[in-house]
Image (cartoon, rainbow, N blue to C red; front, side):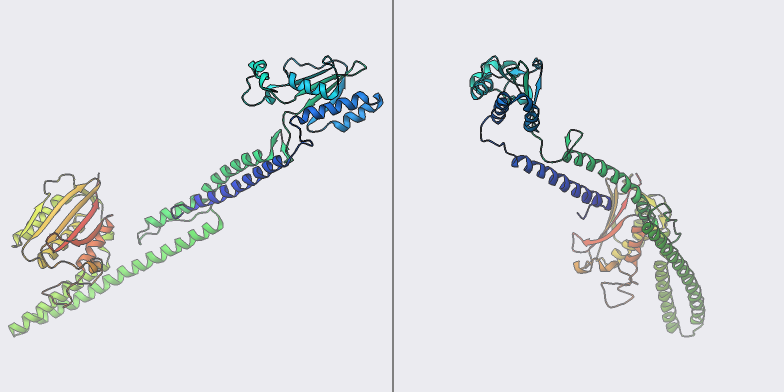
Amino acid sequence: MGRVGLLGRIMLLLLGALSLLVLATVALDHWQRREERWPTGSRFPRVDQAAGIVALLRDADPAQRPAILKAVSGEVLRAEIVDTPPETADLIREPRLETRLRRMTAEPADRVQAYTDTALLRRGVDPDNVEQAERAGPVGRLALATYRLPDGRYAVITAAQHRRSLMPWLFGQPLSLWVAVLGAAAAGLVLVGTRHELAPLRRLTDAVSRFDGRAPERVSAPRGAPEIRRLAQAVQGMQERIAGLMAERSLLIGAISHDLKTYLTRLRLRAEAVAQPALREKLVADLDAMTELIDASLGFARGTAVEAARAPVDLADLVAVEVAEHAAQGATISLTGEEVRDATVAGDAVALRRVVANLIGNAVKFGRSSVAVAVSRTGTVCRIVVEDDGPGIPEAERTAVFSPYYRVERSRSRQTGGTGLGLAISRQIAEAHGGTVVAEAGSGGGARLVVTLPSLS
């Protein structure tokens, strides 16, 4: 049920309720049919009842016959007196039932006749081979019995093809069938109506998914239900507030960056005026480290990755350039997959190169002797793998290392660790491009950082 949407849940509830209603109706109809019993325990209740009617009409005064006909006619049998024999061309003569009827009424064969029809034949009896089937017994139930009265008129006793249940009927069909038909029609109408009513909610979901924290998107639903309209208005207001806060944050970051760099520039000028060389070098080194820390922190706070443009970027070429630069600086680094020509993604080349530079820089810094870089593509996913032979990242910390200012090395030494923002910025940029960065255990015991990005084609 966790995967069933709101529309599916509504339809399941509706169909469940309608199914219970139909099942209850059918069960009641079936129970009532089973409860109905013939008034006699005979195997041929219609024949026996017809014989009783014949005896009543034969022995009664002609003036009483209309009252008898009304009394004996019902849902199972209907009796009437006609002047001419009824049409029996579509019926099947049933000699065995006729013999029983004559025996019970003590009437000769020319005065009593019994018929059945195809609807009342026993199961498995072929209507074209009724004569052969008669050898095994009656081929069907009584459909029509005729009796020629002493005055020459004919008493016609017609049997219903089936007994109706006490369940109400409508247009010749049981009510349970109409409940099922109306239930299916109602379910279809509810499905169409519910999809229409949920359309504003789907548009609202899409708009919220596209919201990136900057420009709010119009999400009002003037044609939706009042609750959905209020939700859309609330989401619209929330987006506007978030966009306002993001804009204020950008202004604040810009102001802080400008003011800090102004003071750092002043301090550097004053530090360079220090007469003692050793002290001057320490002051300048501290100021450079402070500048680097502030630039990294401000870069992360600005959400550089969120601003990433979308243009084709060849990851193989980008990684090759970065590897070449580190190799030129004396790092022992190898590259595989440089020949991959279809490792193209949509993104910002500058931001993606920063990801590669951060990962390779960390591997060179913490690796003991060598760094291995690989570029590949599998299906619709491009992958960059950077692996070193250093101490590695403990399994318990492979998620935490992507948190801002988190470092596996706790000494906070500038020689053994950076600002703790490199991996956080890398993940930020990768996620802005629809990808991920994860830390794994390297084959040689070091760290293995894997970047995955969706390919352009």
